[in-house]
Length: 116
Length: 115
Image 1 (cartoon, helix red, strand yellow):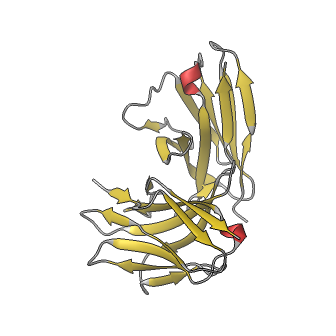
Image 2: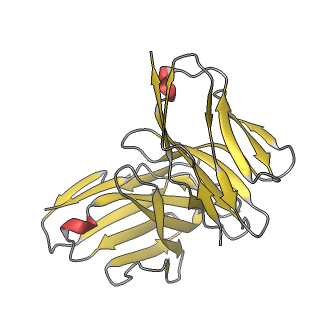
């Protein structure tokens, strides 16, 4: 139980294009999803907290107009990287917490984005 | 503000040897502590967690960690490692459970188990 998927797992795009990454909770409903960014050999940095039906809360320094987050249902959150540039190349990981709340975040497998 | 420090960025060890991955935190409130493991090109998997109660917590694959409030530490240990334990290990802290508290991660420790 408590499986989180991400799609796509890999994406390569040209500079200036937009890329959408999906995060799904497969066997539970998630009121809260988190989006992280991880550079090679570094830790996870929280980008934003996404609550179903409301606007995402972004961490300081994260451009909300560049990283659009939508949490339209209890099982799906999307992250759209708009007008991507090479410096946006990174590993993006989402996590989810179930309806019952609690302490455990379940992580997706991550999406590797390469912007050429 | 909370912070997590993992004192070792890389820990090389031979198979069947014991290992300790160190984690220290700072916080002005009660904390909840986690260890996550990340295999190459994968997301994070929860290894073990401390919420309350017994300060010694164990995972199903032989790892254990002890919450030491006076030393603000949550070190991860395993008495005998396997090749398959090679991975990146992250210590994390949260101070809120009810609303899905944000996790603050340490820098990670790369455990490399050699034959």
